[in-house]
Each structure stands twice: as structure tokens, then as C-alpha cells.
Image 1 (cartoon, rainbow, N blue to C red):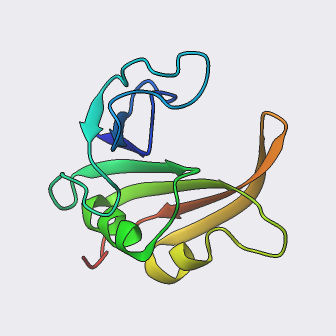
Image 2 (image 1 turned 90 degrees about the horizontal axis):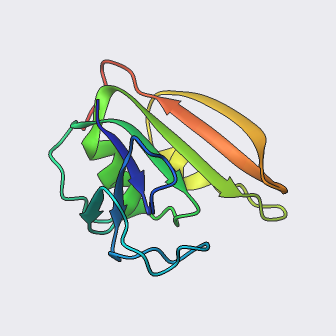
Image 3 (image 1 turned 135 degrees about the vertical axis):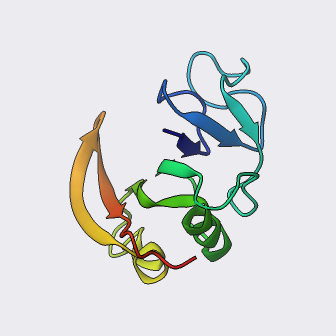
Length: 129
């Protein structure tokens, strides 16, 4: 089962981390190498179609090309997990709701001291790529 953290720096131990930088940019270990690294950007993910079972996107900007790539690499029975800060009067996942297929579950979760919008897409077996 392949898990991909887009923009990840190693927070999810089982995930491969897609990042344009080989080193961490946050936290106490800033500057240290990112483990399980796939060097690249969300707009051009270097993985085959439908090869990822779970995609995690936290804090990374959600642009249309990135969402198209995430859709392309996600397995038809897979899951996409989005978590982003909630700016006033803006839905951080509005574009994703337009672009990504599947059943959707939405809620606000607390990560540290911050409220975060969590949107989960459960792909259907008939997902079109």
C-alpha cells in the first residue's frame, strides 16, 4: 500500500514524501534530510497512474494542475486526505470539491492549537482518469 504525503517532510512515518526540497524546512530539525523522499512537485508527480492508495496534502497549496495529478495517481479504491488552515470566509478545499471525484467527508479538526479543515475523498471503483 503506497501512501504519498504531498509536500511532506516526514511527519507520517509510513508515507513517501513528495517534496521539491531534499531537506526539511520546518521544526527543530530544519535543514536535515527528508526521509523516504520523492523529489518533485505536486504539479508533476513522478509516479504511475493509479499507483497510490492514500494521498495526504497538508498546508501545500491546492492548484488545479496539482489536483489533476493527485487524481491521476490515486488508485480507484484509494483515499485523498486534505488538511488546511481555515482562512476567514474562504473554503480552502473549494477547488478540490470541484475537481476530485468520490464520496466526501468534511470536518474541522484541531492540530495543535489551530482549527484545520479536513476533507476526505473516498474514490469510487468507477473513477475516471
